[in-house]
Length: 452
Image (cartoon, rainbow, N blue to C red; front, side, top):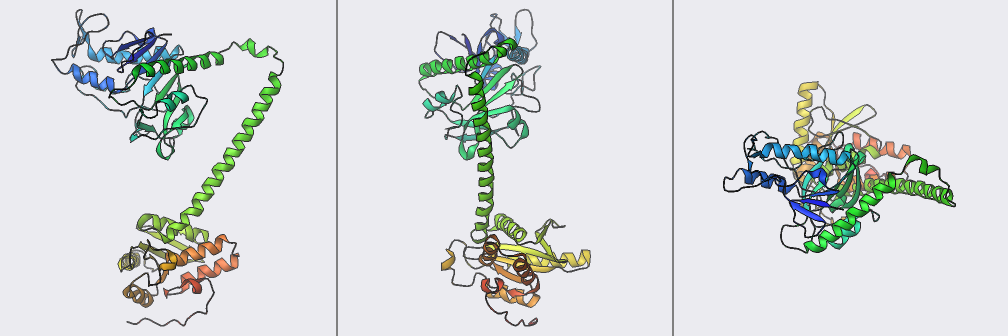
């Protein structure tokens, strides 16, 4: 087997080392390794009059049109796409050091030259955002032990680092890619794609400083040979499937059953994790501020049976129940929550009155002393001014702790009648609603009218 390495010199008798401007045709080899940095780096050097390159046929490479005595860099770089396409159509294997894409302008006849202009992509994809994104990290976790490059990544883990990740939230990435290594937060950093009749395998990148390239070359060749053996095993003639092998049918049936069981277990695991994530998110009611506190309140109100609506002004949370609508403002603080949620709520309600002619109820969620444990929050979580303003305008004032207590009651199996009681109390009461009162554990205090 012969491998062509582009942009990354690897010392081995079975590896030929070139750059994108000097290499022979890519399809003249059994496998191809490409460092994408080399494409834009050597293209940029062509623009430097002091840097000279000779194509494989010994003609100088110039940043101009081709002639009988010179080769156009633009035409040469564009030709690499056709060569790689033919190589993949013939079942070739391309190994790529995953890098974020970048464009090199100034190449005559090829203004679109970028790091992946030579590499075909699966249908509906491109080797750039939103599918391939820049990232930096050292975490490498093998998730497919049977992949030919699994041991390669494990052995060189200390030297490797990812410089790009694939976004598996994009449907084409999930459809075409097989992830065998992940980085931080489970981001795909080792991914194999079927492209045409061949394979394109993206790996984390080696640093440019010195490392054991001789050992790397040997292990790289071993992994590529395994990829090619696996591919040949798949490409058996159709008649071979009819050949009887004692015990094979039972083994295939057992494997199919195990695979189905594995898929069902994975589905249960995914569902359990998703449910756990939802339950964990309710803790944000007593820990968070800003958007995440509002999102947690949105989930909490939905759990309690409120209808959660989109705000027409796009400015905040809106809930409704039994035909009553309320605007909600949330605020968290290291200390007491001051007047800002009340001020925002007042402005929203005034704007609604001017534009719609009605005035919904108001609700303030205050998560004061949010870095303190709940049992240490012995002081009021909001200022006296906030409490008095909410009492005067009959806005319901709840702490994140109180809303969290209502959520725990709902999760513990509170009846629909109990939940309806929670909802009516929140929508009908003005001023501070304490946890025991919200849960119905204490008698309702008499409400007073506006103080001004």
